[in-house]
Length: 353
Image (cartoon, rainbow, N blue to C red; front, side, top):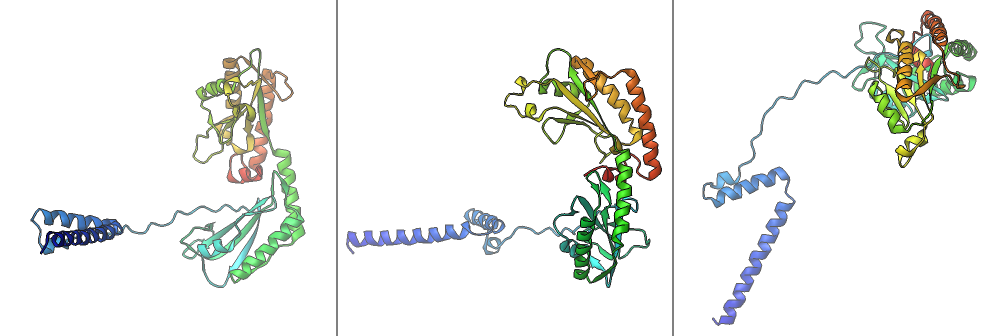
């Protein structure tokens, strides 16, 4: 054979080897990662001359670890209250799952300005009073729906109740349940009476700290507040004194102008005043929130060279602090007698919204 023929044969063999190598690379590129690692290991062993056909088929070892036992889902306690909600039971033909109920509910859990809640009695409950918030993975033999009678937006009105009754009837049909709504006017009268009580016993105390001479800036205020235990809040220009109990409302709120907090250069923003607020009905009396309010207001005023004043700019004297403290004692007693002790879940729901 001539030299040209041998050269053409060589080129053809080179092309065949190239095509084979390309397809092998493509196959390994799209191979699952775990299988790719096993093939690579087999190739390496074969190159070392230490593995035969059986080694080329070797796979990663499988660890037979027993799966952990299924944990019981965390259960949220009941929230509905006879004092605060109109509660309507749903009589079910058969037990239902939490998932089926939640799927039937709308995305928003409010009707007008009032929140509503759904609770269930578990299928395996031994106590007829063992109501709980719906928990995925659980089955329920009974359901009840509650709509809040009043909050800071006012009492439940006729329009809100009518919408609630219509939605409730729709949910009942979807779940094949029977429902009997109470008389609308009786519910609305309850709501108005509760709202009247709430309006007479709501209290949010605010002390204003005003600069005596030099103005402040946000960084200066936040530095002094942080030394007293305040931490940044969720909104610009807001700091909170955290509760000592998990899940509790902030004991106090410190607030200043949002525009100053969002300024391009906060060090140049000018603050002449900041506000310290206590939402009385949201904080338990045994936390002594009013005493803390007075103490921290004085300490901040001293540290920043300011005055403690009321909303009108009048400097608060010691007699004013004592008078307010006495009025708060009467308020705490009235809330406790009505079943809305300050800081309790019912009180926080009633005085919100």
